[in-house]
Length: 81
Length: 462
Image (cartoon, rainbow over all chains, first blue to last red):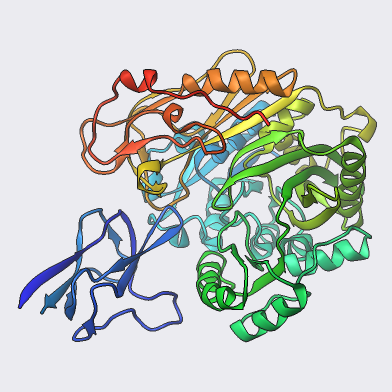
């Protein structure tokens, strides 16, 4: 078991849902694949999907929905394996 | 009109403040906390903070802006483009507060801003339209049914949208089923309305738009602009006039645009967009933009008419000052958008802190920008940094002058900060058929004069 941090590749606004009326991409405790989207980051009016980056279990999100994030900032933790 | 609140940011806020000042009208800027030090804020006579950085909490909050206008003693509001510029509810709220709205009536925004209803108006006015859905569709199965009647390839557009966001072209049903949910979601996020409009995609099409001015009774056209050079359906280079159409098409299309504006009682500046089929020379009405547009300076340079000034005069109750026969297009104008994007990373938007800035100038070169040394490009808003607009006596000389002007443009990263920051200038991104983005790097590297030698000249000749 290794701890994997999901990092925002760009600065912007962090979203956990694809749109306001949908469910979150991933919940704490959920199993995800490396390619699965776990959040969106909106930068300059375009939306970028952020993949888990490692297969495993979502441990926690480190930022709240609609928080402002920096490039390189960890936004979630995956327990890989 | 004594005091104008500008409900926008960036280069258009700067441009509107200047027009107001030219008329002796005082100005009030609004800004999010991210823009407290921005150019438009410092340029205005007064400024009001309206909320935190995300536009949904500041520049898109109707009540905050109307309250700012009241508090600052403004008697008029100019919405600029984007943000609230085409929201009928905003125009109505401004009017309800006893202020003048620099734009058309809320009812006209409602009719012409919605592509679906605008097509109905055009059809009633005898202006041809592209085959497409009569109404906005809100789910995949309705979209598939509609596309079967229209015929592929089909273009998907936000019913409430503008600016190219949420637009997709699909070649078949499988593509439509994949693209529809994404496009609808983007539209819902950007405009608060996920309905999509479907229409036939004309393969060899020119995007030509006619500028109009109306005073509520009469309307005139100020010729056309061509915006065919796009990247990912976002405009990057615009010109006035359109190089690809003949005099007959021009006469018929501009007349149709003025007729449309007259028939809806249009007041203020507006743009009537057409698709022109390169092979058949047919033109089709697409939509009307009920706002000032990003590319409006090209029209200003060929006609000598300041569109924002005219908007302010019309909003003050003045009738049109130019008869159609007095509006003449002279020479050629081209606009180049400089965006905070990284061509090396697929034109990914690249906000950050700016260091050195050198802007082009000289004869018949105009730069509309909010960019200045040490400015910060926030991640929250669109990536437009500057518009380089040039005039020439003909298209060839305009292209030559634009090469000169763009070669003078430099924007560097701040050396005090790492991360995604601008490095050099437009010049290395400029080549045939591509955009002219500012070049950004991720290492905070300094400008290298070798970049100049590696530059390739802009080639836009047809």
